[in-house]
Amino acid sequence: MNLDLVFKPSGKKIIPMAIVGILGIGLLETYQFSRTKAPDSQMQVAKIQSRKNQVRSVTSLGRVEPQGEVITIGGSLEERIDRLLVQEGQQVKLGDVLAYLDSYQERLAEKNAAATKLQEARSRLKAESMFGKAQIAEAESRIGQIKTPQMSEITAQKATIKGIKVDLQAKQKDLKRFAYLQKQGAISQQSLDDKVLLVSSKQNELNNAKATLAKLERGRSTALQNAQAQVQSAQANLQLAENKVQIESANSDLKLAIARLERTIIRAPKSGQILKIFARSGEAISDQGIVQIGNTQQMYVVAEVYETDVSRVKVGQAAIISSSAFPKDIPGVVEQVGLEVGKKDVLNTDPAAKIDARVVEVKIRLKDSQLVAGLTNLEVNVVIKP
Image (cartoon, rainbow, N blue to C red; front, side):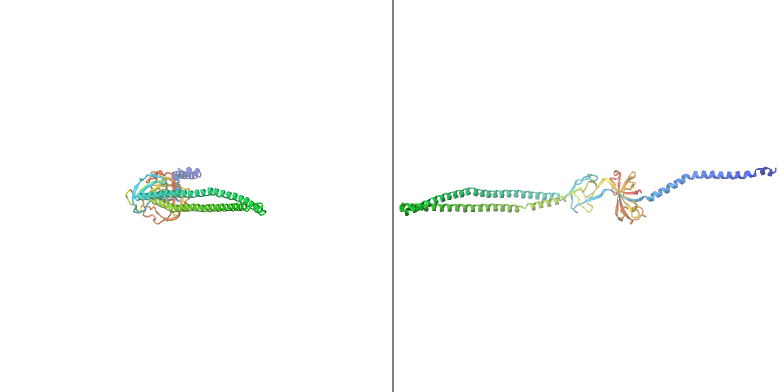
């Protein structure tokens, strides 16, 4: 068979068709390969994006605490608890009595004694005041008794003197007339002498009346001075009596006794829940105090953010709190970023962790406090989202 006859007529067509076939097969394999690897590429992109998100997020350790932190309530060291009125987990309000110290009864007796002394002082002051005012009223009454009656006598005496003067003047005129007549020989010497006697008698009567008036006026003046002196004396005695009654001193003693009594009564400084009891009835107060209290109605997480990351934390950012101690993650919101850099308080169990790392405390308000209400100081993981 002549091969040239077989292939020669169509040689120019076979070569292009082979090239097209090879290219088609290559494109098909490329398409199939790309479809096979597409999911893996998408996963790689998602992983990269997740890593970027993690880089932008801030992670740290934190601790759970009530709003306003945990407060330890104590008392005078070595003093004993007489009565403890609360139990762990009990809710209390501001000012509620938590416990009485063993010196309570003694201080209560001191307070009652001081209150009695103050009451006695007030009663004595009241009695002294009433007595002194009565003396003043009596002295003033004497002044009134002196002024009105004696003034009437003086007025009457002045009227008498005035009448005597008028009568005396009339008699003196008669005497002058009789003296003229006697010179003329119209009357006898005896008649003239009688008129002289009448004028002399009336003059003596006037002098006596004036003397009586002067005596009345002197007596009235002296009596008034004495009565006024009695009033002043009564007023001075009242002031002296009131000063002797030491009301202010007794009142100060009572205030001091009340203050000492209050120191034997342990009250709640704020509303919250009793978290732990350190000293019970009959036990002495130690350095640990008596009880711990916190507002577990609203819980917070204090996240210890590295100082290098704190610039990426802002108030209002969302946060996620997680721990194996509660069944689900708890969302929260950054409420406060600390202003001081310090050492870590929450230590990681990882031996490679930086114990001396410098951190800033960030307070996160939890949206669900009930899950951690009984887990104060629990170590948690914190992720603060961008």
